Amino acid sequence: TALHKARGVPKQGPKLNANQSAARLEEARAAKLAKQAAAMRLKGEARTTWMLQQLGRDLRTDERELRRILTKSRDGN
Image 1 (tube, one colour):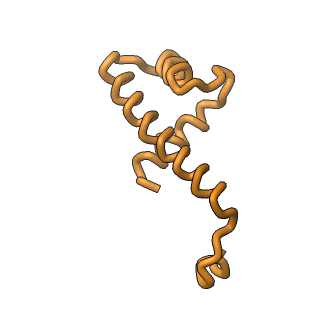
Image 2 (tube, helix red, strand yellow):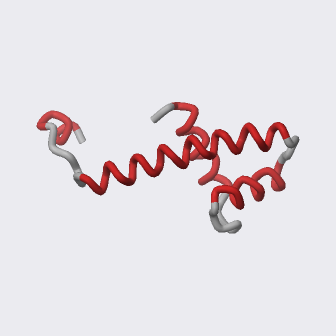
Image 3 (cartoon, helix red, strand yellow):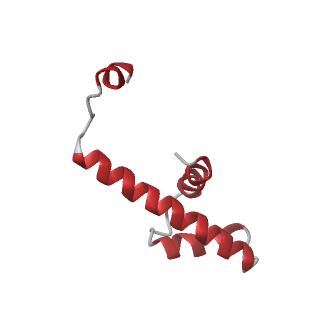
């Protein structure tokens, strides 16, 4: 929130940093896998399934989660 930013107070401390860095690594890996999937000409459900397997996610994971990860990797946030 604005209050935390104004005072420079971290919300969670070291745990927040670890989670953020893990998320950034996953975003970079997902972007790389998206390029590989495009090179393999995978589309639709086959692409989603392949990417989830490569990321080590459960195949029942919603496609929106994968799209969110890819969007964040493009934004650089």
